[in-house]
Image (cartoon, rainbow, N blue to C red; front, top):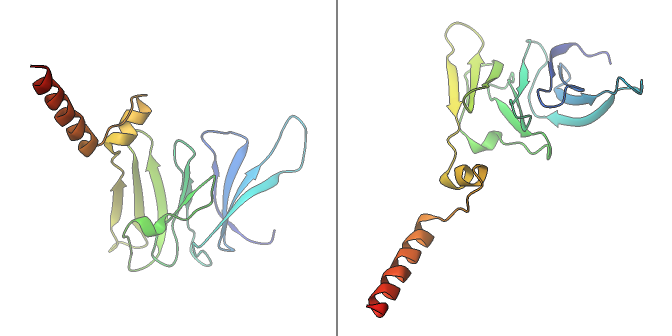
Length: 163
């Protein structure tokens, strides 16, 4: 209440959740139930992104796992939705001034951030999945390179003994 809203996003995974970014430096996940006509409830709050005077946007990843936000501090912020853990320290990004907009690419695992004004760039971050993550998503057991080499050596030894 009494704080202007910068942006509102509907959660792509759960249509009954809104991500509300307001100018009190807080992003909230608000859940509502239309069938039961209950009052909306604030499920999570995310702090860190500065938002007092300029309109700052936030967004949610297509899979609903992360919330990203611009900030007047010049640093984009990324939080895990379930744990509310801040992941902004996992990458290097610092604009000279306000990060006013962020958005996810739905097809590629990509996040774009833009600065305020004509002299500021658009930065694009692409997350490349590791072999372990790809194998896991395909339902295969992951074996790292060292383990793979050890298995090959063991097979060679067994073949040499059997010969």
